[in-house]
Image (cartoon, rainbow, N blue to C red):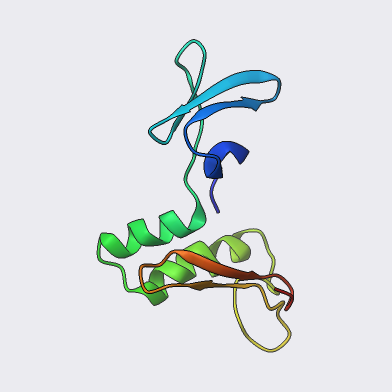
Length: 106
């Protein structure tokens, strides 16, 4: 899970959070007074970060899917096994998102 703002995928520029103006520059989202407004970290970037520091992709994936689902008590999420929802993503060799499947639907 990430706590990213909806502005995470919009790139640099103005956005809004709860009625407050937010400016995203170089991946940082800040209020007009300079206060950090929130994260722009996406799940695929989080995966790339974990792999970059040396975690095997299987362990990094588990940390971003199964562990958060377990924490929330969602046994049917965060894993691909019989009885679970078919929520998954397809990534290219550079670990960039190419496709999303939610409950078995693309």
